Image (cartoon, rainbow over the protein chains, first blue to last red):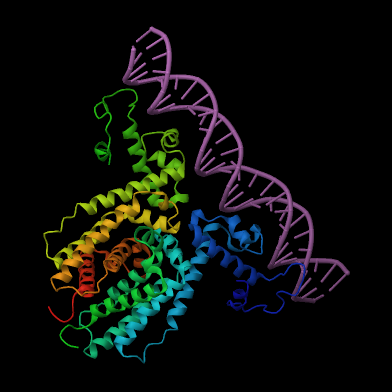
Length: 230
Length: 230
DNA sequence: GTTACAATGAACCACTCGGTTAATTACGTC
DNA sequence: GACGTAATTAACCGAGTGGTTCATTGTAAC
């Protein structure tokens, strides 16, 4: 938890952080600390449900510092959301699939998304919360529209290659594919509580999750594959 | 909105509701009124985000009445959630598909779920909110586990008939089918805000929605159909 | 009509919570 | 080492919120 702080995009001081002084004087670390605590708290309880005092308790700092650095609760939430999205995009960008044949590339994307969502429930929860708020805060994040199209671009390239190779149907829509992949990968995490309450939690055991992931791969795959060959 | 109130399960007075008296003295109507207002408010702002005063404003009654009938905020939320689920189950039960061949029955179920979710965003939001709370309140609703298996039973019957008719693969899982149908139908509503913020709102136009629905039908269909015939 | 009780209204209250004030401490700089 | 500024602390505050008190009004039963 505290060790994650040091490899944040901090250009300034990275030396005098924890050498037993009375108090640290290390703004970047403090900010990152607050941001992490806030992320956990917001993800756990939503915007209005989150308590500043609870964030403070997750932190090494004081309440005053939160407002000193982030202004108010909503701005802090916004910073959390921004950072979370940024990390996701970063992870997405690191997925190199250009060397794979289109069908395998598509599989990789599905598997990546499914796994990523599964292993980042806090991000999922933040998105859920943001949807409860109709995306009102998200709209104030600039870098979104531009960079998030990358996900579509990636699929678009796969689709073009798939069509070219005669593997995919010619009317496939990268956007719809993305919608489908997201839907199942997202729902799998977001609705785990109510789903398992209604129908038991068998589907959330490790092996069942692998099976579900494969099911998603197959679903997507059969959506895009031509029916007249193979 | 107000006309829905009268056909609630009220056994008592149904006569002297609105004949110009000074104040009505009609508990069932008042309760139903509160419940509806509360549903809207909770769906809009979540449990902690909802304001009792805001619920009052959506109502013909006073704050006093809310606590008089429902005890406290959380119990009111619980009552809202309970009622919402009950209505959904009711709607599900009214879907008669026994006379259809299995593949068409499956299509009907998918279309029904997709449309139902689309047209009941408040229910979706309540479920989202409940998931944010890890289903903690839902667990206190009794009638859930028993009655919600109906959805699975329905699919189970379809699957059996499909297998029997040689149409479906023999390893289809009603639970997984349900998971898939729910995922896409739910996500379509729950994540509309963030999705369209990221990728535009083209997919949410009426015609695109019909296309998406058909896409879901096809996806599910190709998951269950045998590959060695047709 | 009196009694008993359910339903209702108005004012009130304790307290939580986001946010602030003002004073204090570290630290780079000259 | 004095100065200016950034970082930090402790105490404080006012609005808003869930929830209550108490008196009042309708209504059914006798």
